[in-house]
Image (cartoon, rainbow, N blue to C red):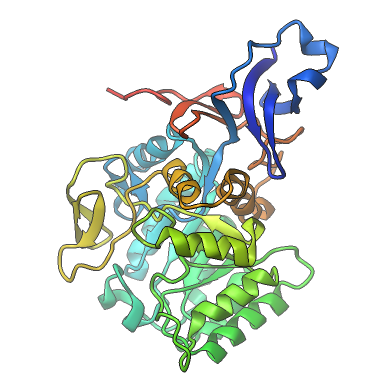
Length: 403
């Protein structure tokens, strides 16, 4: 039985002020203005809902957990599913589960656990944040487990995950980084340049190498949370940031932005959208276990984290230790900072979906388009979640407090 939802529809290209989304058998059967609804469904047209926004289900490619559970710390599948459920009922219908730097044994063990969620379709794949990171810019990563680039570990993780090691953060200035980039591309994974102290020419070399290796594949490397875990741009020591911006503007990479109002100033986020365009930006949460939870003490991998005022910081040292927002909150903050709603939504849905899509079988996702998966996020005019559908099925607990 087809489902019809009416409201202000946000597509990758435009806003339809009085639009309708028709979902049938897990897919979007039609999208357009209410006035143009085919007669097939005209008898089922809902009443106008001008204060209701219809967004595609959001897609997060950098997420360590939420709801009190953490992917890097999960001992069993139920804990990992707890984190997935927290974000799904807040509108993130597709996501990567992000790990943090740890020993090889722990990384492979967590990858094995998450492989079960991948196989079940609960997550689309895994993002490994480390361990090939620069010690000077490791942030909330445990420096005890940092190491030089090791292609063998890349291959082992990719094998355990059955080809769903979608992205892996690597610092271009770490010894062996070039071999890691080659191993990632060879495994069907993407390098994500970040947690780096690289000079501009080193960053540019890595970007160009990755681009050349993937030439013709239609895939693009990413940049892990631009600006965070990197030296700030200086006019005599430009570093990696302007290189990443130029590469994104040229369409060579997708840059992640943790646009939660904590990691980046909203004015900077707005200017980056103007410079490189929404098609080259993936809004991410970098969420950890405290997402959706109260202030207190949490864990991120092997490190203790204190959350105060909704901001997560390492208990020892005070570095920002991931985010506590849901992706819909990031979209709201981005729009409040002056970014157009259509652009912000595209960067939280279709652009990150395009990062994942080549390794996922079946219908595409990340946009309200005919033939795409029926992942729909319904919000009020202030982007507060009202309902969520994933593959045409309602997500339990969405839009209401969960007991």
